[in-house]
Image (cartoon, rainbow, N blue to C red; front, side):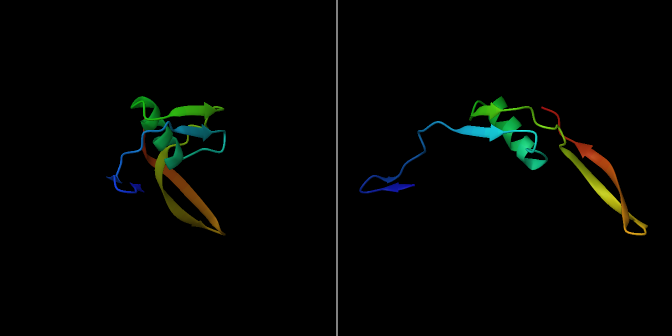
Amino acid sequence: MGTEGLGPQPFQGRIVLLVNQHTASAAETIAGFAKENKLATIVGTKTPRQVLGGTGFKMGYGFVLRIPVATFHT
């Protein structure tokens, strides 16, 4: 962020992240990182805890089998 005559200045405000039951995947990772490192206040309801990396296999008839291969714990 630039200001007149002062050049770039670091952000000095507060950050609040809003989460709910639809906050999943990478959004949960970001919220967890921000909370653990005291970068933001987290406000809302519990997230679904679905931070899983996985891979999908086509099974035929339009079905896909998704198998988790990694997870993230905070």
